[in-house]
Length: 461
Image (tube, rainbow, N blue to C red):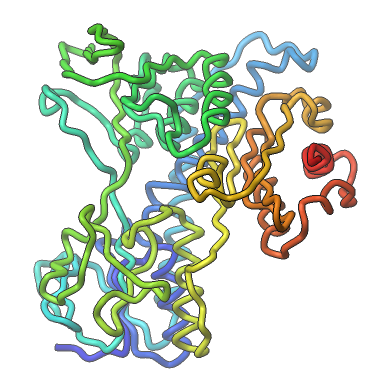
């Protein structure tokens, strides 16, 4: 049994900086990661970084194909997809090497590769890659083990070659016809990406709208944009079975009480993500999880066991890299600097990296209604965005929710170029309690996208 001051399970966007900070503070720390190939966590290796690299390449291809709107003619466009993949792999590898270098150079920090699980309340057993087992104990344990792609139970799926959000990023050949099951953020991002690379893309979902957590007008606006690019959608679809004969995959589903079939060459299944807590043997430590397997924590991110914390996706709630990093900030500040940070009242932004982006922050109209708040909705079409007109990017909607009692902004959704950046501008206004009316006349540089916040908030009565 090896005694440490802190044990960290997982090197994601909470575990990695936490290991560096605790060890720099003199804590004898061990960081456990499943394999060297996953250093940096899901985001660096199989999530944000690789997907956004490929999405950026797809955007360049789309820009060239649609350059005629600027009076520019490009007679023929081709892609060396292997070179595109190699660019992605080089960036991911360099990022992983950077993480490893920082961890190995840190004093008081041991980096261990292997599968971790609880063997007692404050003890962790690690099955190393060489087959040997090592055990650690510490008064402080931090779980940052993340999530993995969830699957669906579909009749015939075991006999079909299919991909999850990790596997689809490794293809060396662009699919001829891609069927996507799931119209959430991941399905939409990857679906549009492969469509722009040249695939015929069909998205199928049992939900009545894409992005089921968003307001209907936001979902409808984005779906229309994607359909104009050539993506096809089958919503309210109850999937019955899937079959494969040679290279052809057939998906059968019920829609409006009528059976329909679609055929494709590749199948992507993206119903969401599942907690990795089921591999940690939480019962040996008495740590409680909810009915979906996510670890329960309080507002300080501590579990029901004193000194044991869960950070990032594995605790449930918003599954975003920036939330995991903020979890690290809260925990490290509270423990090392005796602060009183909490997850309560966090203003959470996120971006769907379709093109145009969907930038979201705070409450949606649907959420404000559920909370029975007294609010007003303001909205403008993308064609009113001056910078968008100049750039020939006029798609989308800008929308904000304003509290009628305080005059403060409750939330916003921006479908447009750099929608995520615009949501962050609004987030700063929300954090600073800047009244919504102040944005009617706030001085923004001209011509920028942020300048159109004047236009949006001028809709206030």
